[in-house]
Amino acid sequence: MRLHQPISVIIVSALGTHAFTAHSSTAWTTRKALLYSTTDATIETTKTKKLGLLTFDLDDTLYPVAPVISEANEAFAKAMQNFGFDGIKPGDIEDTGRQLREELAIENPKKAAALSHTEIRMMAIRKQMETVIFLRSLERIAEDEATSVSSLSPIIVNNAKIWAAKEVSPTVVQAVYNAWEMERHHAGERHVFPEIIEMLEKIKEKHPNVIIGAVTDGKANPMLMTFTCAPFFDFCMSWEDDMGSREKFFKELDETGSVAQLKWIYEAALEKYSGFASARGSFKNKDESSSDVWIHVGDDLAYDVGGSAACGAKTILMELADKYGQTARHRFTTDEQPSWSVTMNTEIEKRKMMNDNAEQHVDKRVRYISGLTEAINDILVEM
Image (spheres, helix red, strand yellow):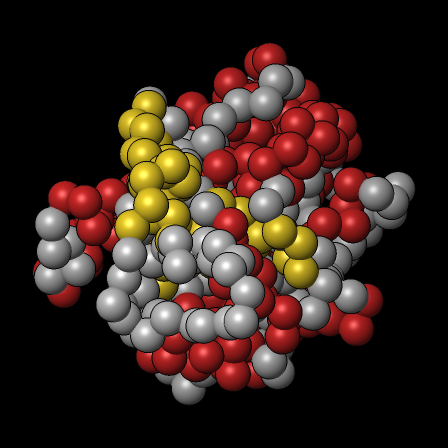
């Protein structure tokens, strides 16, 4: 009985390391557990590659982002009230953030494009505080002068606005933001997709040495989701960890509208992986380590698929069924934006183009989370 042994060919380029498997024409005989039949058929073995690194996007991949943001916004409104800023609604943080970003885009498009989610929300919180202080001061002045607010002179109004901006405490702004962010982590844990934990357990069982990381464009962190995801994750990389590279990417995107390569965050994730793998002794020798496979899982065509594929990852697109309540990916297929989104219309058009270009890099699509382990195994077998 004759077996063909696969030969692994490793190609290293600027875009990463890729492993390809070809079959040798050289036959060899094995003494190990062969399957015998009454015919003289030739059996060809398929060697499954080793899963070295598995990275996940977070929002709309591990949990639905809409209810998570909604509950974090409620925490924002409550924190504002606790500091004496009454009458604030949960959605005000997103509405104000969107408005401020659009206003800035008129004066400085590059700066507006490069703003992080944290910067936008901090600006929105400050603006809400300024507005409350400003209106209260106008009411006091009008009462002292026994007149209506609408009758106050432009000079008085302008001075009150300047005074209100100075009265806002950066410490209080940070405290309100911290309340928002903390609730975001708690809400993410409450809303983790039901099958996620079982799926992660299966992956760990089948691939005990795999390094699992998160790559996100916001401040969410599975390492802080103590009762659900934290035990399974080794690291988390945020776009906001390297603001210089993040600003460069979005400024280039704003200038050209081309499919800019979102590589820096994934290269950083690969560096993290290298450190963890070395510490665990996963790199037994050069031949073994070079054949390890990296798979990235996410819901965003441009950023998750396009960005990670540019660095050599195999990709799984989480294009989930309606029951999971994904909203982020629908921003590019419908005219109406979700309430939590601060993406501008000009950005939507550019992202659509990036999505189209990323389609060719999708290795597997998943509609149900229970199918993720199968998709991972298929990629490892097919390589």
